[in-house]
Image (cartoon, one colour):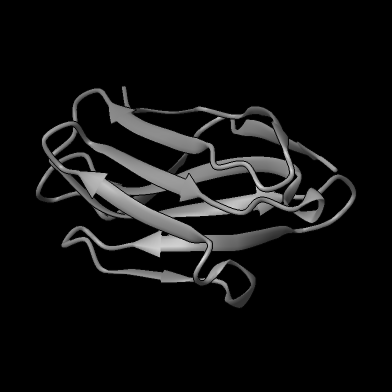
Length: 121
């Protein structure tokens, strides 16, 4: 059984720099790209950052220069360093992991439960 778990959210003051974590665990063959999304209540889910299995990352325009994604493949974990937070960054942050459970299986998406980040002005 594959699990994806996010952590590191909470209440932050504007300008703060929290770090989010996303860990994949369980029995799987390969962990490929991982993607951070942000969900605003009543709205759709927006892509925040994507990081490939090789560590190459790209970001939504509004996050460039403020957020940095990284990963530790030995721990099956990705991180999202968030800097210079603004109240409009408030939302629930989700991690999506592209995983192959065996060499013959197709790539499948696994989602975590999300972690809430609330930025106060």
